Image (cartoon, rainbow, N blue to C red; front, side, top):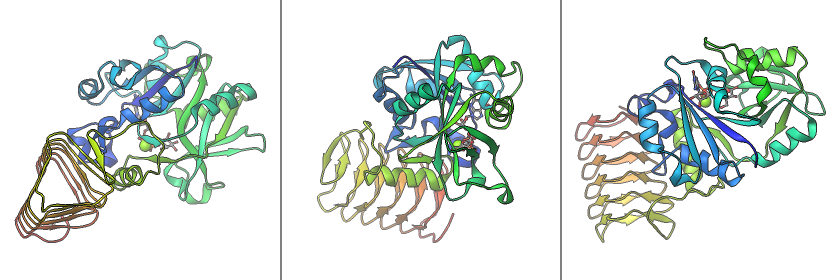
Length: 356
Ligand code: GDD
Ligand code: MG
């Protein structure tokens, strides 16, 4: 397809703290793969291989994880903001590298949206901007978009109050933009595409359309959503070409060099990283994602949980419906309960109970 993509990857990921203290949101692991791989694979599937990453926070980490995009089959370039310029500033900043039509993605949405269909819709309507729309239960967390029966946008309202909610259709964070819209973004200061640019386009009568998606879609920007997205991936609810590393056996992906005791129990769907060790009687899964180099002690149970690299789970402990950051240690016999997020390097004392 003759279009380039810009991925907005410069936010600080505040709602995903403490996980984003050590890793920026665009590269948090999903089934042990940096998140951006899923977006790049989607773009590539729709023939978009020229991708500009608009970064600010921890760009060196993003560059180290994603490189030139070769592994994902795209050509990746980076534009870096010294100070965050907001969602529109991030797009404008990429304008020097852009020509023609642009596909813009928020760098935190897991989706199998039909981007090709959105571009065709955009062209058929003669739109200058097309915003992909998705229905949600609570529009107050998103950008509300009112359209007429032809799909023309009548109102864009970011994070509406309850009283302002008139529809459940919101901005999915996927746009098709004609490059001639970009000069409308004021340079040199932070600009929000949602609060400033879209409302101005609508006010000025620039043709803007909403394209309703029927697709899997989730913003991964909170711990609960980040975990839920991976459970969805494990359950096969997301159409993606990205597969976990290793080999598949009975609904479990097992990474190279994993050493699982023959008396350990593996329950799928689960993903076990490279070099993971599990002791006798350990139960991994169902719905466990275990990062490379993690150690699961004898008799320990890990289910419904996301463990980053080199987590150490002590003997007989239980980790259920949690997220555990890199290198954290769960002491022997501890129980870490639903919804817990342990930051990288955290230590749960032996036999501890409840939330941490
Ligand atoms: N380059 C750059 N510079 N990127 C930024 C900046 C910045 O200053 N600020 C935020 N971003 C990136 C974030 O990294 C993220 O990928 C994307 O822009 C959206 O920012 P969020 O902070 O995740 O916004 P949100 O989730 O509250 O709302 C947005 O997404 C919703 C859909 O998930 C809005 O676009 C809503 O209208 C939308 O409904
Ligand atoms: Mg978001």
